Length: 424
Ligand SMILES: [Zn+2]
Image (tube, rainbow, N blue to C red):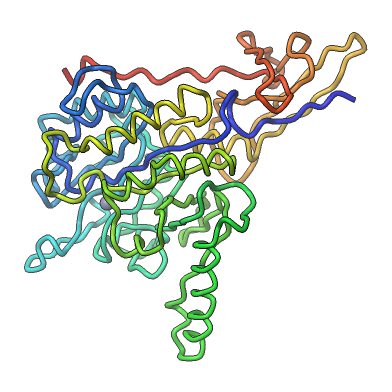
């Protein structure tokens, strides 16, 4: 009997990784230089660029004038470089909405300014006019960012309809957000795979919070309990306005970084060969949690010092070898969602041909699937046809044995194209 199976990752990859950087504290110069280094092959202050498909977060607003935002301050006036950001969004490289903006009160405790719904309406109007959508939202900052959604143990009001900070209807219905990072961090290397004895940090953390939770119940502080989830990449999220999204965790390396935002030094460890090899062995998905702009001080002209540059070059090798699929967070989450909820079937014709039929994507989200990268293990790629509903996939790729003794076919996943003209 022929074995036809949906492969976990696009051929030939064994694991998938994205870097979901929070753009806090980054200046425009650093922001653009990092894009050049990560996304192009141009010469930069950190050496020749790597042409990686790594994305970035985005803000509409900030209370700090030097941070990178689409609008000036809290106004409706576009920044001088808003067109550059627009090009990067359209090209898929600015893929994550880092909430509406930076409202960290510790920056100016004398004069706190809070997010409100008008700011969401103002931003949505601008993006609707320009046809811009985001499917991925990453909560930002301290407890005063009441725009946040569904984060544990924080004052999050973005999804509560009677609050001034309510925006989730605009965010999901108009901006198109489907995936939320609501604050969940994990030290397990690779998600969407079974946990094992190598996941000591995770088990210790879970046990610790189980015990703390019991104590909190006893002392009447049940609302201060932290829930430690399993190891899924995507988990159904019920928001307080009745809408349903999916939430995903980010990889923090160590649970102490729930309290201290990790920056470039921790990124070197997160991207160490040891961690990357474990990711491959675990065949997991991973969204790395980092802050390129942390710490503010540095000794090198480029934001990444030579050791970090070396880590990125090594990462690039893992991608080139076909071991790790390195892409943007939005793309990876979409792909993971499509494979998780793909409706498909196959039959074997009397002449031996295998016909695979994709009948859409189910699950709780309303999304328009792309089917890009979907890979099916089949015994004879030459005798396999794939249909999306009744339409035959014409440019199907036929792949040899991937090292597991199985050949496959896949729907191509085109590379993103970086808008070099926009930044030069
Ligand atoms: Zn942030």
